[in-house]
Image (cartoon, rainbow, N blue to C red):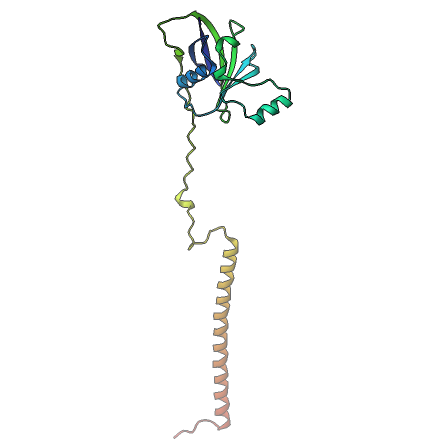
Length: 217
């Protein structure tokens, strides 16, 4: 029985990779589990391997979860190949090249993609435990990215209900009109008082004229 050594590389960063040893008789679900473990991700999402050519173009799929009846029927109607299932597919059954390549996708929503290449075929070690991570290079990125912090609001931009905004033209115009009306009202009252006083003086002069002046003792 042979042992395959695969190099599993982050598609977005070729400087981060793991080398995995797995027996030819083990299956692709075993391979999936050791990959997830070696990069420190959780094992809570769907995943697939795709047989690949030298240009990393995806071919037949080996899925973690079985197809539903509806999905299987759709693939059949479209004449698509039946998706293989990881736990039913042994490693040796899909190794046709000494540098066999696969594309591995973990969590399709996040689309973590890895380039998987066979780099060595070793003799079985009866005392060894497989699968195992033989080599680790580079620190894996965080699986879940933290949400960006909300920007803080400056004190000078705080809204004050009792204080109108300086750019509120409607308020400024209305305020100015109110002040103008008030001033005009005050000026009108002053004019009325002056007019009334003038009329009283004229009435007094007329009374003096009619009586022939003021008697002197």
